[in-house]
Amino acid sequence: MTRLVMKFGGTSMADLERIRRAARLVAAEYDAGHKVAVVVSAMAGKTNELVAWTDGAGRPTGDAAGNDDASDDEYDVVVASGEQVTAGLLAMTLRNMGYRARSMQGWQIPIKTTDVHGKARIADIPPEKLCAAMDSGEIVVVPGFQGVADDGRITTLGRGGSDTSAVAVAIAASAVRCDIYTDVDGVYTTDPRIENKAKRLDKISFEEMLEMASLGAKVLQTRSVELAMAYRMPVRVLSSFVEPGEATDQGTIVCDEEEIVEKHIVSGVAYSRDEAKITLLGVPNKVGVSAAIFGRLAQANINVDMIVQSDARSGEVANQLFTVGRRDAKQAKELMEAAQGEIGFEDLRIDENVSKVSIVGVGMRSHTGVAQTMFQALSEKGINIQVISTSEIKISVLIDEAYTELAVRALHAAYGLDKIGA
Image (cartoon, rainbow, N blue to C red; front, top):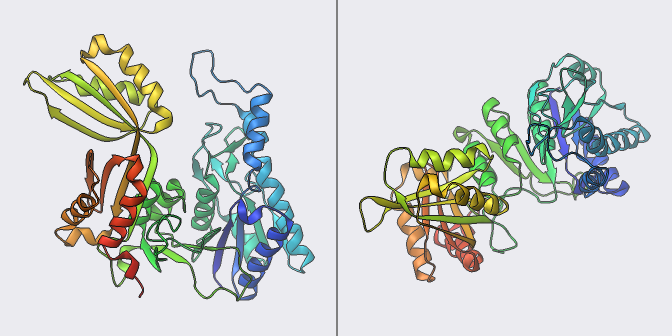
């Protein structure tokens, strides 16, 4: 008998009927001979409600030192309760079906984390209690998104943390796989809401999935993919909106590249509308200026994505262009304006009407002409490329937001992604 970890997201836990459906899926895996642990999210929308309550109660927004991200352990006590409710309800449902089941809170296992409340990171999960319960025949139900600090206080992992919890529990339990049940039946070549010819992938590599997640794909949370890749823990993405035995496919397996026999040159097209372009004109072209610009952004915890520097008409100055998340654009602009005298740039421009469209594929490593195909496809649709960035398995371009869907469909067709599996 092998250990298996199953994870159900908020939509899969949204009400009692969906919890009963999840219980039937869990029971089917148990009956098939697996030793099962289940990680659950809060009911859909519940975490937002709990966060709103903490805001209404006057959660501090800064500490005595003026930090804007003050850690509040009572905040974690409140928002962690959503997962505790669904863990108890699922365990009760399984018991009523005749199975031995129990919920184990993060502090009971324990899931040890750092003490940064609201955005803690998992430090260790001692496997003894968890594995002993699974090996005894119990179905262990674990609330995701949370753990316990060294001082015994509850911590939470930040949004999307339940995926990370599930992968970490699977690693601790030496599970054969971590199955993540969502409202989609796998990972697609692009967003099916934009391109109805999108195809579900049978397998995708850790590296590709990490790029897809970081580039805007919402199927898996980035930290969970990083963790799975580090420990080589296979992850399967599949739908929870079926009854056991109804599914005609087995979702998408996220695994080592070596396990994929037939690699695609491009496996997917991702996009993100959460982009803002900031251009500094007339930046002094001298040592230390870039450090001054991006050092200030880093100190403010503003993540910078694309960066381009180009010579201006005079060799003594250059133009510096970079992108940040749209929600960070105002703060980034204010930081740059405050430092204008010290940095010495002449003008600042900001454009929030942009989006990033990317192609991802491990096959890029061994094929030429991939970029040319991308640029030609966009050119034929009259789409201007503003910025380009690349990695070994990714090419991203910044374009006018109005052309996002057109660009996604054009690239999907250009690389023949509609023919995968045909």
